[in-house]
Length: 352
Image (cartoon, rainbow, N blue to C red; front, side):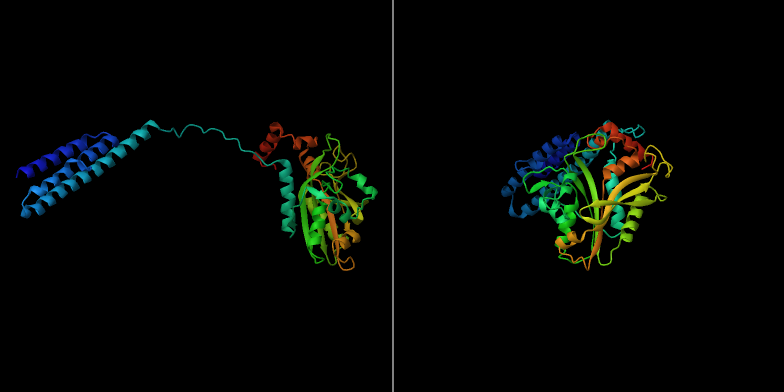
């Protein structure tokens, strides 16, 4: 009887201690005090050995009931304390959602990136592949495979950065075309564009840079004609400068194409009447092109009696300067935030 009363008093005291615990640490201390290895409830079991055999089951059941009651009360108190802690935290960290947010500056696409992607999207829609290549290139692929042997005077047109006698920084992306044709083992069709950086020993001024970007295109297949080239370039001009643009082809010379042409687009500012952009001519030169030279096809493993093709090359730097009225090519590469922010503002207005 005395043991039962002691057990009841222990339970009542435990419930008091649990309710008086004001934080998780105090509640944990109460748990250890009553339910730990050396706790009061655990100590009750030690008296079982002194009881008659017939009283032990009932006594053990009573101890377990006390333990279960204390455990349940601790869990409930823990839930209450956790809620109180959260409520207090929410109250102290109240956010006024009516306040204006902090402005986060978001960048805009660089005008060169925008121009390159616009051209890539057009040609992807026409079924072309985008092919990348080496910027440090072999002399063979940069010149010889393009009908420019070592003694060819046209090499002087592309003053180059040589690393060794046979290795240089590529002067155009044409080596990508040569390597791609070579990998096809004389089997068409080939339909690719090759965007990338190129390097030439040029003086840095408002319209020239030792590093600039270039995109070249190549189509090789059976029955490719000059009219296919003209139609492709007319579509490109309309995409870049507007649907009412026209092109004209002027005879020119490039060692890797025959015949070769310079391509002009009707001035998008004055519609051909003459202005400062087109230098009063009504036309703006935008790229060079031509039919792939038979020697180039032959060196790449294609039979020029079976296959023909066209190629073209343009400078996104020049295209971007014309489209966006940029007067100095060096702005593209100096990372002046003031320059770049202009395009962010124009983009926000939906003008580009």
